[in-house]
Image (tube, rainbow, N blue to C red; front, side, top):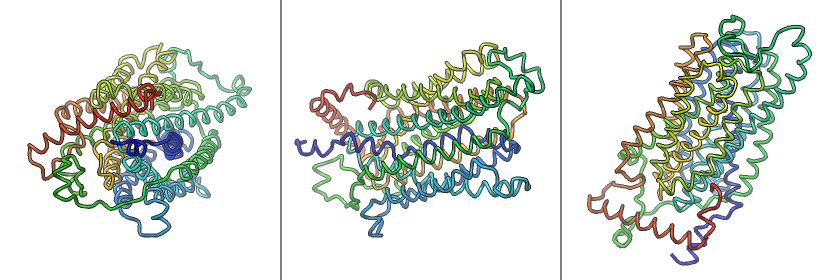
Length: 521
């Protein structure tokens, strides 16, 4: 590789950061969606558990169905002149951003003009905006992910972009909890004078068995209808901040011009055996690794989304901690996740992607076991919950970054099908999450300890499943195309890829000595 090609392969820092913030508003909204949607509908709007579960299921199914459609559209050549010049993926990203801005504030609000109407009317009102929001969210997510193979030519660069993207995702999550802490903290401070003359607030150091025997603490917690304005203000603030970062993305990220893939000649095939094989959509379904990576990604999203959804309910209902801790505990969790992301590049380089993913599963499983074994102990609400939050966050960081990097490896040189692959992965993720959350809500027995069992089992099982999937992948190389190749050609291709990876890695290290120790990127 000559110096000009090396220069061309490098992605400057500013474009990398501009790309990283392109999913920031989606991450803000997703953090609110998974962390507070059930709590908002059940405790603030006082709707039943099944209603909240159905809303969640409708949203996840809408998102799941939207992602493959968006993926197919994002992979096609856009023949509208202005969209073609702007970028086929960035055009879809812009449409999704606008729809998110319009729809999301209505989700965290009461039914406007119909707050006192029947459950069916309330459901219809919120379901409409949830469906619009989830379609818009899918547009932003798939188009943003599909840009990675187009912007990055090497595995190290793809890991780098995924790490930057994840770092901003964690910052977005933390920002949501900081904003929530501010709004709920101000409200709690204003109501502080009334607590002495009306109700007695249970301190966070109260041993768990003491408040478990008191009926007034069951399924009530500290969140109520009076927090409606706070949650609505948090949603509006997130949209305002997210809009600013979306503008930065669209101004600072230049999408490479779309060039339809051409069939390789016999000379090209003979001189470059590892040339990317053009993958049609049906060809992906013939690859075993396509399903294995899909299962890995689904396990990751189940683990992360379930602990994000039920940690606030666990803190509020099971541990009965004060109102601000539904923001404090998730904030600790995501800050730990952010710190964990710094170690992703060296760990991936030293032990490989599959072992890194298994490590993340083990860390997450350790947190789930701790919750299951000691979740009802008196010390848990005093200090153990914070250590569990750290383990959950680090485990989620490892799993998310690694699973996205493996998905990018699966796509490899076939960037023309990147959006379809991410769309399919997201379909598996969204539908499975919606069904699991619906089942959890249906089985809710109205006991505070129920959420301890949810975190222990519903989050622990995906970790075990992820380990089993990873074990099934040993011996296979993600991204190797075997369509139409003989066994000898496959072996030659794998050997060639290994040599090329080593040469590229040495070249990058020699060209940029700081590359090996440059933070988490």
